[in-house]
Image (cartoon, chains in turn purple, red):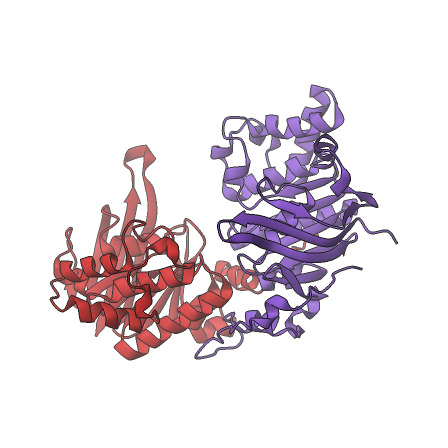
Length: 285
Length: 256
């Protein structure tokens, strides 16, 4: 079986006044046709990992990897121009907050059409039809009206669905979703996850789901990488996340208040400096 | 003795056609010493209730009583000695150019304390920050440390009632646990009354003994934490929130 994506020994570095800061330190994993969750706290390097795959880390940040292979083709060796053909067309990314990711002065329909036309060179008429179909696919009830709406006229959940439509319209092989639902209310969150889940199943896509929400990842994904201090400390099947072994993962799980288990006090995570120095666990298939 | 009593509280913003009714006929009471939660999604009006109590939302009608005194249009000094609020975003609620020392000493002097030195040291100690933090600026602190400072500032006038507006939603889960434990300890030590707003059912259930569930400005259900934990909710919306809080479950429409 060939993997959609193979990442080997990925490093992301930023120069600071006090020397190099390593945001991601030698991470290796692969992605099949699955929902892969990356969880960790802020500063664990989970978002940086997602961005580095698309080579979206801008100078002075540096990305190094032995290999980031998309179906065997190494993305690290591509020119910036070749990389532009990968972004969106083969690997798409959904960011956390639709408010900052959509162009506020363009109608959303035009923005989605643009995504289609750039990648397929199709006619405007065809692009419009595709856009309306896609809006319908992400459960927007009145696609004609939303097509002519501006981003500020939509709720957060609708904006996030528009973002998903825009990312899905070039039919990518891999979707990277960076906290796609953390700006949304729980009921809208379920709708957005339903849509992503359906798209992954129907189109055989690979999904990288970056999140800080352990319960959500455990219930939504197939496999989970747990990151701490720029490294992967543990890899496990999502449904077995609650039986995780690593003290960091256990600590995170125990620090969550639970509806079904009342406790007078929550466990506080004590961080072991040794965790930072442990070798990164491989998430390869 | 009731700490907070609300009767038919209405809060609205704007006039005429632009009028938005943010809270409609909200009524509940919180006895002194109790911890009461308000849960709901964004726009349900839960934070607006806190803002109406503190006087930050000025267009309201109905009846608000704090510690036996009914509130009018203006809040007097005594009110702010009784009620203090901790805001959601510790990155936004501290002045970026004021040191922790300035933040706390200004609050203390506004409330007419004279032994400011000793009180600042005591406050920092109470919220688990060492004296080394006293002359730092907010940008030199982590999110959890900032929220501790915000809590210290709220405790400065020695209030009886704390209004907590999503105090941990901007924090990582491990830091959230520390802050929630701190709040639990402070409540036990000082006999505080909490009115806590959160969208996270498990956080509210951990902190509060009773709660009100809000939707579109209405309180749809009042229930005890025991009923919440036993999933004994009567209103469909509460059941929906309970289900969502347990993680992702595929909807019937798209499964298969």
